Amino acid sequence: MKAPTLLILAAGMGSRYGGLKQLDPVGPAGEIVLDYSIHDAIQAGFGRVVFVIRREMETAFREQVMAKWAGRIPCSCVFQELDDVPAGFAVPADRGKPWGTAHAIRAARKDIREPFAAINADDFYGAASFLALTDYFAVEQRDTAHCMVAFRLGQTLSAHGSVSRGVCLLGDDGFLSGIQEHTRITRHADGSLWNEPEGGAPTRLSGLEPVSMNCWGFRPSFFEELERSFADFMRGEGGASAKAEFTIPEVVDGMIRAELGTVAILETSSRWFGVTYREDRDMVQAAIRELVEGGDYPPVLAPA
Image 1 (cartoon, rainbow, N blue to C red):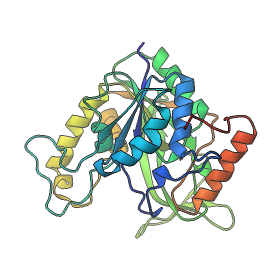
Image 2: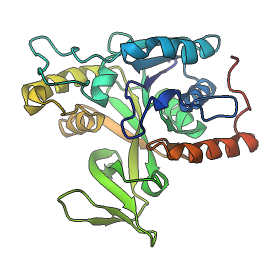
Image 3: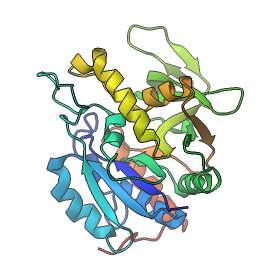
């Protein structure tokens, strides 16, 4: 089997965070969050890294990220661009941003021909998550067999505001049957978890629900599904919208319902943490410092 590729979705600008959080140092030697993902991917047997970025970010990424890892693993970048739409479709005049996470993966359709993992640039997934992905790819060879690393809801919250999470629904066969979006999850003072959507009734959650944190494992056939789904999206209301997003959960859900592929849920012992709000940065720094002091990571991940 050809070594899988790590696809890092780094085009988002971090609107709630207030800046380009993908390049904000959190490690003891100035590492950023995605440095830890690259390190763990190398250890797990990934063969190369592809970054999805915006063109205006290219110089910073090449100088601050790609140059750092060039001697350890092949790195390249592709661009998520607003006008990258299927033939016959046009971008609405009032549309100012790209089309979402599934559109970001689609940006790599000409560059990836092997199994690949797709992750967020600003989330820490841990070594066990990447090992689970490579183990799955080594065992499961079907072109339509995909996977996802799931984390427990209660371990994925921010202390500084509400979060959106996709709760995984499992079928009788144990595979993913769908993803239920919860758009405003908060922890109350008594420790209870609630989804409190604007204009909707609140629902209590246990915190044990498996959730998607955008740590996916796909076969190259997924790009065909992206093309079909994006064309449908553009034909519908999304194609005329200034804000609608073409998301990974929506594509996966459609693929499962049409019985065009399966998604296995992979368990991980790794701890997840991420930078949603700027105030989360101190927590992330402390968590990484603890992992370094415990010997999970070296004090310097890659040579400068």
